[in-house]
Every structure is written in C-alpha cells, then in structure tokens.
Length: 535
Image (tube, helix red, strand yellow):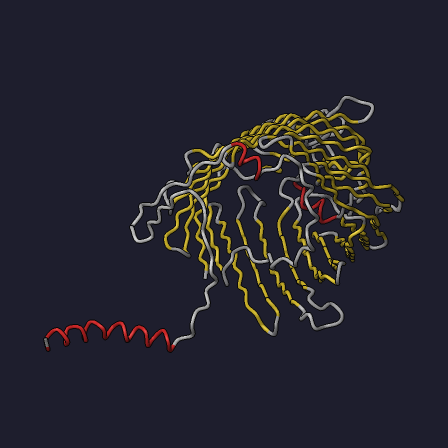
C-alpha cells in the first residue's frame, strides 16, 4: 500500500511543476473559433512528411492572376545620385606594367583614398618607344587628380548634392616621321585642364551644372599654336504634365591661336514619354556657332529617339536628328595627330540624320541587329594631305565638304557553351560628295570583323579578333587610294592570384601595312608582355 502511494506521488510531480509554470507566466487569451464543413481533415502535424512539388495552376487560375490589360508604366521616381565611377577598378589601388618590342615600356597606376570628406583618386601613366621605323620614337605621359564630395543634406544650398572636380595634364612628344625629309619636325602637345561638376536634387527638381577650363598647346621646332577653352553647362529637370522636362544650356568658348577664336552655344529642352512598350525621347533647341575664320552659323536642333518592343524577341529603334555638331581642335587631333599647324575649326551641319534599327534577342545568350542609316550633311571635316607633290608633303590639312552617307550594318553575338562568346559585324557604306560621285576621303566602303572570347578555366582567358578594312580614297578628287588590309589581334590573360594577373598580347599578327599616307605607316606585328596588380 505504501509502495503504491509513493509511485502515485512521483507521477504527479511533473504535472504540478507544469501547472506552476503556466500559472507564473502570463495567461494566453485565445479567441474561440469553430470549424464546420463536411470535408474530413487529415492533419499530419506529428508525422515527418516528404517535400512535394507545388501543384500546377489551371488556365483559369492563371488568367485570374495575369491580366491581359496593359498597365501604363508609372513615371520613375527621382533618380538618386550615382556612386562615383572614376576608378577603373573597385579596389583602392592598381599598378599595370607592360613591355613590348621596339623597346616599348608602359606603366599605368592609380590610387584612391578619402580625406576631409572627399573621395580622391590619382592616376598616372607613362609610355615610351624607340619606334618601328626611323624617327617614329615617341613619349606619352599623363596625370589626373579627381575628387568628389557629397554635401550634407542640412545645408540650405546644395544640400545632398555631389561635387566632382578634377585636374589633368597630358604630354605627347613625337616626330612627324611620315612627312617628306625637310618637314620631319619634333612635335610636342601639352594638354592642361580642370573641371568642376555639381549634381543635386531640390524637391521635385534635379540639376546638373559644370565648368571646364582647358589649355591645349602644340609646338614644333619652328612654330607653335594653342587653343584655350572655357566651357559651361547647366541642366534643370522638373516634372510637367506627367513627364520629366529638362531645360539645358551649353556655352563653349575658344581662344585660338594669336588672334582668332571660335565658339558654340546651344539652349533647348528635352523630355521622355513612355506608354506600354513604346518610349520616345525628344529634344529641341537653338544653336549658334562661329568657326575659327569668323563665319557665323545658326540652326534649330531637333532630335528624336524611338524604342518600340514588338515582342519578347524583337525591338525596333529609330533615331532622327537635325542640327549643328560641336567640334574642337582636341577632337581633330584625337582623330589625326599629324594635322598641320592652326587648321580651320568649323562645325558640321546635319540636314537629316535618320537611322532605323531592328534587334533580335531570343535569349540572353543570342542577339543580332541590323541597322540602316542615312545622313545628308554639309561642312563635314575631312583630313587630306597638304600636298600630293613629291617632296612637299608636310602633314594633313582639315578641309570641309558636303556629302551624303548611306550605311548598312549587321551585328551579332552568341554565347556558346557558357564559356565562349562569338561576335561579328559587317558594314557597307556608300558615300558621295555633293554634285559628284566621289567617295568621302578615308571612309572604307566595306568593313567586316569577327571576335572570339573564351574562358579556358577560371584563371585563363583568351581574346582573338580579326577585321578587314576596305580601300579608301586619300584626296577629295578621288585620284589616290590606300589599299585594304586585314588586322588580326590576340590576347591571353592568366590570373596568377586573386589580385595579380599577367597577359600576353599580339597586335597585327599578319603584319599588315596600315598607311595614313606617304610614310605615315602604323607599326607592324607588335608583341608585349604585361601584368596588373590590384591592392
């Protein structure tokens, strides 16, 4: 009897402990509910159940979710300020070095840091070569200092804005090695510049404004000339009638040579309108310009870009434009550094520039496009030899012509097997000068190219490209042609460590002869070894 009482007492102890715990805690006040129905519920909460795929929805259920009514795309909210895109790599610093044949060393380095609320980036590069032919030696050097600052929002003026400023200097020293003997002179080009840009948002308004100062000087052993530039712009965007409207002003002033100048001014407005699969961007404005000989130009600038998504696989585009195009000495020298001293700087006028394009994109791995463009323009800059007579060629002059261009271009890209990408293009251009069936100088009628990229492993990548450039005329009269050529290049990258990469590149594998004119011939096959280190 005593044993039975002890066993009963031990069994009751956990129950009493549980009751005491519930009493100590706050009592749960659960709402009463009643389940009614005829279906037998099989609740297997206490059983381990194998996961199963969700059931498929019927067509009626899908239609109830996916409406067939096109809902207009709402206007996007005000775009926040983007992060700085100054640095070429998302690291604090980098060093790139290369050494090629013809004794051609090249170094490029950069470093980024913060100080006093500023994000500061410093870049520099040096390249030197003994040249592929006599007098073709050159030296290039440059340095760039850039800083960005985000103003605190507590400031009344420019609060929350971003200010980006910079200072650049570049020098190129070379010889006019392709000119006739008595005109082979040393040339030095110095480009010094500074800029400041501000972007911000005030309520429903966003703004962007900036200023640029540039001093470009060119010196030879017997002459010198310069181009001093001051450029400013301002853009203000505001919502109007459900669309963003941007008003713009551009002023570009140049002091050219000793007693000349040229300028370009533009004021206008632009907007973007979207309805379903259709997007239209348009702008209009007034333009005024004066070339370096004092000739005045005026135009009304009109532009429209239309995007229409025909289906999930096809998109159609259309570009239409009319008006003047800004220009500068720096742009001309970037195309041809062997331009004669103090060339005429003027502005191309496009009477009509229209370019429809159809793009096919069945998947993220395949895309193709075909584009047809037509342009009728006056005052087109062309670079022609200053003389075709033997012994009198000293460099290139900039001349201006009127002409039409009709171009058809096909491009395609295909990502194969997940590790290779094949791309290609073909372009046919028919150009004709006004009142005569002569092609525009230095424009090839036929261009075909192919590019192949492959990831051989997680550490090794190769790139190979080949391009055919057709023959071109040299002079406006179409009397002389430059022969066609095939340019083939290859590059192999190998990642030794996470932050260290080595590469080998070979340019002009076929040693093609690429001429501008006379003895201005680009270098043949060029081989270089290089490495890049990130830190």
